[in-house]
Image (cartoon, rainbow, N blue to C red; front, top):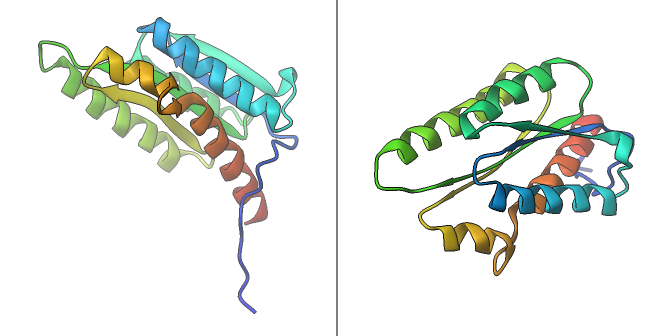
Length: 154
């Protein structure tokens, strides 16, 4: 018989760190609310959740790496909102945050979950922060719970 490993959506005893960008806080606060609500609905208590606010999206990765490397967390959820503007700054920020969160995954044995919105318009960000397209923060938290569960089984 084939051995199949699947993640359960139960927070268990894992500890979850959430790194959230203060820039575009009108969006990121909604992502944070969705992530915390999801973790709690799946059994995490307040003492299993740590929230770390950083100035902007670029700063998410350094905090995420420090948290993941500490040995205190089962997963790190990275939340931010990068919205395209008039300059190429958007492209550089998106490249760096994508690469940085990925690097945390490579450098540590702790899953770093990419919950960063990269949108062309404010309207798109609002839609992904709890309206038409659900809440990307909740989706990121769900991924964190599942990855923690999968890694515990491996």
